[in-house]
Length: 338
Image 1: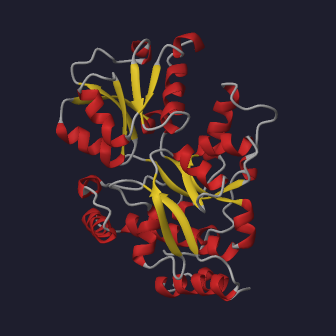
Image 2: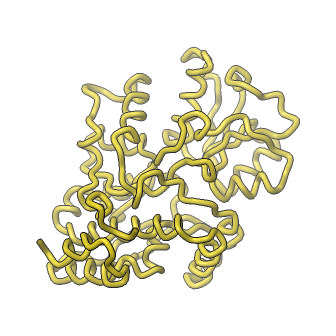
């Protein structure tokens, strides 16, 4: 067993020593220790938090720009423009089923009682149920991902036919503009999540039609992926990344909310991208269900079945085990931070 694995398996290992061992192992093996990635305006990703906390050891992050949607992020990873990317698990299923050589390695967002995606309307809107959406416009951050899949699941459960669902118009909007578009009556429903949702609710004048948490319960909804060839060449770097992200998830879960928010504000201030830090002040949780970002079959089978039933998957349904792995996550064997 390598020094890295012995360190990660030690239940009470010091986090700084664990992270340092990860980075040292990767460097000693001649592996890539700088990971190119895309960020999000005004927000702090879990890898960025992990790096700031020192959980990535010698593995460094190289920000190459921002992205507004998960499908574009993992497409960039699949084509080699970035080293890792994150997206809704259904989008990962679609890309993998299309033949992209990618594997999901750790969950990074999800829905729980504190953090969820809600479908919001103006307070005076007549929209109450699924049938009220026929002929209406729904704004969301990207098409073909989490928001669309959850919406269509809700519409199907509400008894709408495929033809009726086709009359619900989906509009792609940057998350920071969605609330404004709803209030300006450019759209009828806004899909809002996380800190953007909390900010809109705090501004008043909107109400919830339904949420993904109400519909599906608590679940991890998206994961970070690497290309398979990158994983083969750089297994210890991937292990360090996954372990660090897992530790960041558990750090945020264990800290008082004010402590996490203060850290996120500090990260935004230090990186100097001329961003508005107000969004992170509404942070509540990552929403990740599994300890340390562990992934479960259910978090992929739900969307494999939905995509197959919707006719968006050709041939045999992919198996979850062919799309994700927990092999690089120290929490799978009881390691990582407690």
